[in-house]
Image (cartoon, rainbow, N blue to C red; front, side):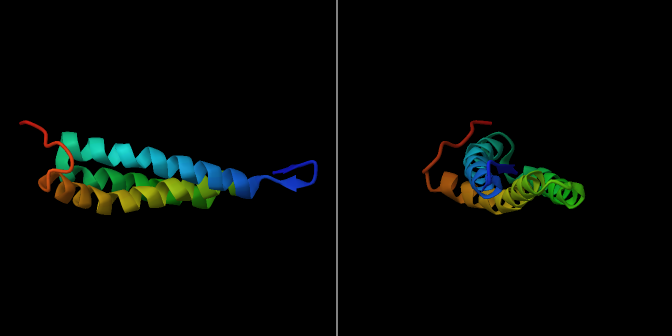
Length: 97
């Protein structure tokens, strides 16, 4: 993505990566709160679909962002289980059944 001789692909990828990671943090907290760790497979399916989609997207920026979303989903699986530990330590509220 060249604009007047300046390549914006790198900075845009970095900015969107920052936003994606920031968005996934509350998603993991809410997912663990409402569904517990049993929703881990949602993140697995979304991650596989995103990374697979990235393989078929020709534009570097969009392929990169799909990969970032996919690998953020994979990382979120680990974070779900970590969030369960944080809840048991009392750092986050536990949902009343």
